Image 1 (tube, rainbow, N blue to C red):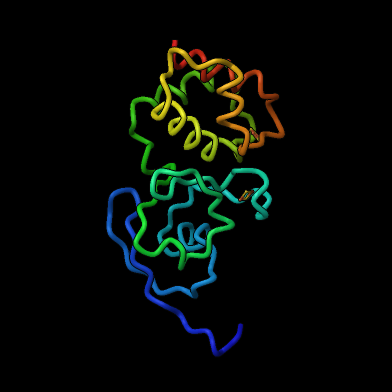
Image 2: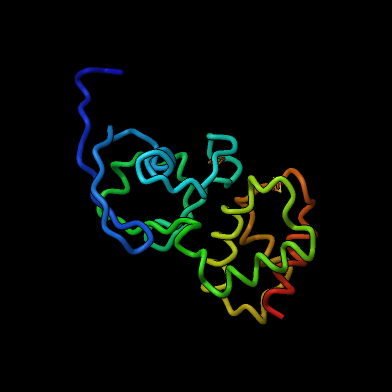
Length: 159
Ligand code: FES
Ligand code: FES
C-alpha cells in the first residue's frame, strides 16, 4: 500500500440509508459493500467486469461494483440485492427461478435479480420480447443453467 494515499470519508446512500465509511479512494465498491457494510449478497465472480455477479444499481444504472472505485460512489445512491429483497417483483422472480431451474450454484443470481428487477421496472414488462430480455441481461453471465431457463423464468414472472 502506498503510504502517500490516505483513507477518505466516503458518504453515500445504500438501500435508502445514509452511510459514511473510511476507505481508500481506489478501494472497490464491491469490497466496501461486502466488508465494511456487511452486505454480502453482492457476489464476486470474475473481478474483472466480465460476469455481472457483482451488479448493483448506482443512481439507477446497473454497474459492476468490482470496477467502481469507491470514491466514484461518493454522494451516490446505491441499491444492492438486499435493497430489493422484499420487493414483490423480486419475490416472484425467486419463485419462478426456482420453478424453472434458473438457479443452480447461485453465484450469478443476486446480480441477475438486480438486473432483471431494473429491466422490468424500466420497460413495459408485458411487451418485452425474449430478445429484449436477453439484451437486458447481456452483462450477466451464468455458467450453470443455460440462459433458456432464466429467460423462461423472467417471462413467467411477467405473464
Ligand atoms: Fe464484477 Fe464479475 S465480479 S463483473
Ligand atoms: Fe451458477 Fe448461474 S447458477 S453461475
